[in-house]
Length: 200
Image 1 (cartoon, rainbow, N blue to C red):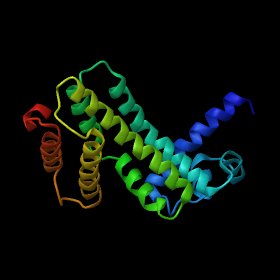
Image 2: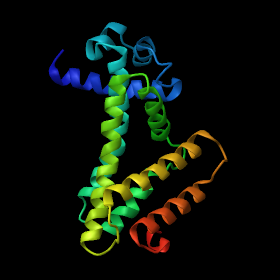
Image 3: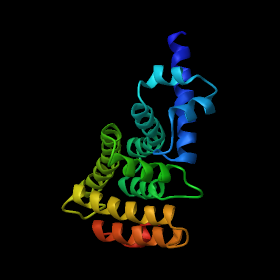
């Protein structure tokens, strides 16, 4: 197998693993399930990942990196801090029939028992906080936001979004997407000295 063919096969296996995990959950996904869904031997799955834990952590990372790529595009854009903040809040919110939120929630849960997954989850989670803190700090520097602690504000905003998103993704009709958006907007405005209407 050429190196390029191996990379394509690896990418296809990771995409298939994400589909299987979305259907079965991290705890109930077996290497045999991924192999069967991909139409390959279980030996090939182990060739690429060595262990089930590595397969799950790399599939989780692969899925979450899609979200982070969109976040990176916002952070690197030439848009002003307020426009970036609005876009980040929209990216973070569950929309439609979200697949990334169930993956995040499942990843956090399994991280309690799987050290390799915990390391991946922590690193990816911290990237969200760091990027949000950087946008807030840029807004403070240019006078758009009033905030003495951008890193703390990023953690508080993220914590509320995480908690509300879990409720929205797991418990049908406990809160609405509209409530999620309004509450996140209100908290963010308070943290950054804004009028909530500026975050529409």
